[in-house]
Amino acid sequence: MGMLRVFMVKLGSRGLELKKIKIHQSRGDVNIGSRGVTDSLIDEVRRRLKSQKCLKIKVFKSARGFIGDDDVEGIAKAVNAVIIDKRGFTYILIDRKYVIH
Image (spheres, rainbow, N blue to C red):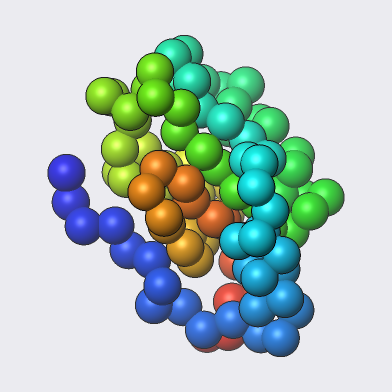
């Protein structure tokens, strides 16, 4: 597995506010289980990202053996998002429009 590319993005004030909310939220918005990354999971991430702008993805224990950072990066690219935080097996994604270039 390669190194996960996170944290190296600059967020606007709304992006920082969204990140803070998601970090303190205990549950994941989208959970990855034993079925892994499917088209329906990517569609759900896309739908929730459109409405919430920022979301938390948790990888369940049943999927930790085969879901890695590269898979979550692939999800982020597929939905035009950026990984802004990773803590253990929990990732926070934000819509690219909240990233300052």
